[in-house]
Image (tube, rainbow, N blue to C red):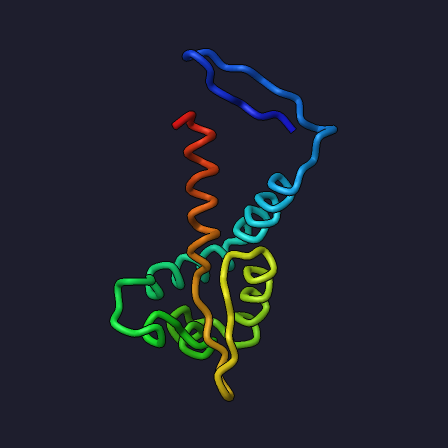
Length: 123
């Protein structure tokens, strides 16, 4: 894997192929999950409609699988498959409430991705 870092306005290439670490594997799993067009759409929908701090109660920050499927025009079984992949990558959280499964974006993971790109830009 080739990483690009910025040092004094010059670019340095580092070969990290023999140095797989936990962060690299974690980000790889996140990006792999988001590389599927439908999963990316599900994730962005959740991010748009389940924003922590924007709504008055924790319950309002979450969508059930059924609500998500209706909003995206996707069958619940297909939504469940994509949610499973997003959850395994740490991008979303899920919680069963009776017959419903609530899901929401994992804000700490989104913050990690933001930091990843900021560091890549040298900020």
